[in-house]
Image 1: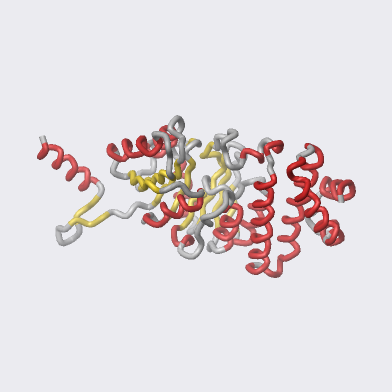
Image 2: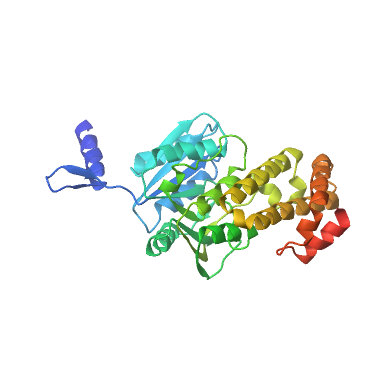
Length: 329
């Protein structure tokens, strides 16, 4: 029985390798490293694992990072790893999302990296669609649509234009799922290991440092929105709290400073997006009477008062933003 088991393991190993010209075994490098962080999602994790294993594109490794789960999420991942040698499981102490994704990046060997979330789902051609999009256009980043933004539109974007499109949040947003990214772009840019919203800061850096970005907005990924999401407040603004808004403001300011450094000729544009976020938050805080956020509202109003002429005269300001400024600032 032991010999049979060893033979099976050896055949599984050979199935992931091929012989080189000298008759030795040479490793096949997967084209894509799929990285998924999981934390206490035992009732949901199997769906995304099954979706990845069912992909029409086969040249991938699947790195599952158990970020200190106290339920059976890590055990479920281990059970799948025993059945499919493309799965690698990392068990680590609980940290933020960034620390978990960095742990996956530390062992990833694919040419490209795709991130998926343990409570979402994707179509069977998700990886094939993104890989074809990126490789056929010689792009460092490929982006598909999601259920909330499904457009049969193709764009080849320069780094700055991709960042601008990102900040408009109409075709795609800062979430790392829906993007296929050259692994080399993470050599110098990693996720922050403190806080919850590192994607707001890192995604613009990734796009800004890419050679070009290929976008085709057909939906291949489904975000499962629920109250346990980090971004649940963006769907239900009544959930917005002081701590969350403070972190968002800090990251928006850091991101704006970095973009001005990277693309100094577009300083006015990057400042516009920061002020746009602030006035939208002021409006929500006042309209929804979010008393916990009143101190931050006062800070934002003071800054908007100081930059009022610049904001009102910007090329990108909308009529609704002008009305909010006149009403609240």
